[in-house]
Amino acid sequence: MEVKVIEACCSPVFDSTLRAAEAEDLAAAFKVLADPVRLRLLSMIANASTGEACVCDLTEPLGRSQPTISHHLSVLVDAGLVEREKRGKWAYFRAVPERLAVLRDALRA
Amino acid sequence: MEVKVIEACCSPVFDSTLRAAEAEDLAAAFKVLADPVRLRLLSMIANASTGEACVCDLTEPLGRSQPTISHHLSVLVDAGLVEREKRGKWAYFRAVPERLAVLRDALRA
DNA sequence: TCAAAGTATCGACAGTCATCAATGTGTTCC
DNA sequence: GGAACACATTGATGACTGTCGATACTTTGA
Image (cartoon, rainbow over all chains, first blue to last red; front, top):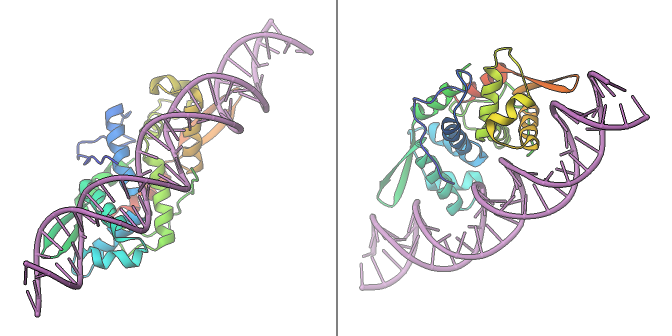
């Protein structure tokens, strides 16, 4: 899945008729959110008490294999929705609420 | 594609940890928006001067066949994002902004 | 009733994606 | 150095979906 970070300049769906390129970018962004595992990962990371979570915290609750979780986290990182920071053996993930806000604004009427 | 109309009761992603069932519903809703043709259809319908549009108005600008456009419109209808009204030979589509608002609220931080 | 027009449905196909097992990479600790 | 651990990558596979041609359905008008 090729993921493109959506920019804040994108026109909202209801504002004016979307051009083909804008629609492609927006659709790619929504595609990132169109998976239940990724939504739950994003939710768990955003609600982590320390503000961050590592793969080991996220794998077991979702009932998916470690490679699958790692794959979904990479998709979220590529989309700019979460940030990855490697510290020692662990990889910590933090949410980027501004990115979600951009998508939310694209849905304004 | 099985489409489920998302209800307003759904927890936002950032509010509390999403349960599996909530994540499934939300993901299905975003999947409807995760297609450029559907996004442009929604945009064109919402921005139509009369507030509505028929298939004949929507087919040619998007460069897809009539069955493809009809399919995408059905997906949008099933998701509750647009309404279909048949008058004579024509099928007219109107946007349902409240549905989009529900999705937008699910993305609030 | 018949022909034409606007849509919807069906069947098939190609491309995409979520998933896992196996393996690779980098780090920590003895 | 070597073993153990945390995570990323690869390759393969099954399922899903966007697309179109062909066809069916419905309404209009003659």
